[in-house]
Length: 305
Image (cartoon, rainbow, N blue to C red; front, top):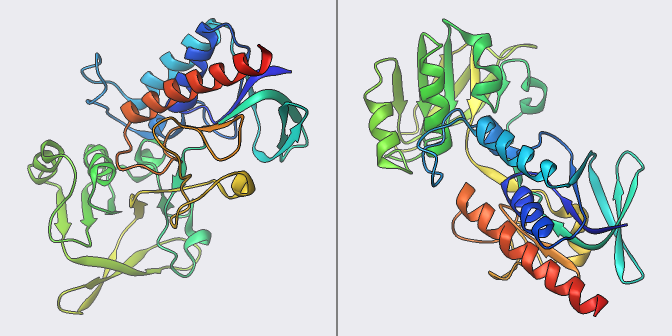
């Protein structure tokens, strides 16, 4: 039995592990996908204190190495449920494994948001992607579309501009949002163009995605853009449904929790992008991890005292 099972090994989960290990607590990190979470898909991070510029994967590797060197254990598996057991918890996984912990920290992060258009799921991996770092090389010298106009979309477009012949961004607002510095880079890149006040309303193609239908939200006019690939970068959505019975979720599905990272259920804590909050950055995720870890350590000490 571990002192704490942390579900999710993104920045918040890794930071939580770091703080718990410093309080001499045994820790299991349970991750369903890539250790490091969503930041592993970021080609360039320039807003993490102390690191002028690095890829998300580089930062993730350092975080993972740090907590493993301090004694954290790690397992790959998708947690799908919790069951109270005595004064602790059983964490149930899709693969059939069961892990026990005196406390649990949900650092579930969030998953890529989709448009919900017809055929979207079938096109994933067949011309539709959510990660330029992962799949950009497949489109070297070709034309691609990036859906979105925030920081993540701009990072995708800038990365792809170094590989692709032409990058077209489709933004449903009249401006690009997020950091002005990234916006300036996008607008200064010759092979990136932006369609403002526009929304993708359909995908075209048989088994392979070949184009998108774009509607101007001001005029109502539509056009079809031929493209070799589409990258969707319209934000993330939480993945908390499997644990909803132990939590209070807001209308968007995020865990309603204050800055103390506690939940309505004693012994169950939350950290990172799955928590309802105004700002979601690596720095806020790491901060949540530290707060949740200290809360969990205090809870365990009180239980054992």
